[in-house]
Length: 101
Image (tube, rainbow, N blue to C red):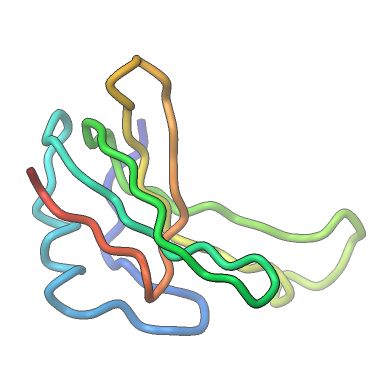
């Protein structure tokens, strides 16, 4: 697993400072609950997942054609293990809420 990022930064928006502080304080094995807003068409709802925190990392996204590096997006993700043992991760956005249980 890679080292924790020095900063937690969204590509286009900002996380609330309290959320950044919480994320930076998490240690592997901490129990967390993640709530994320899901939107499909005009409908929106909250989806929740519980698990054990593993790490925060950055996911480099891009497209399948060669383009300039500035076209890539880099998004922070929370990696966690669900109670059933499934390894999972969720990319953070300004609507994502992570709480320590």
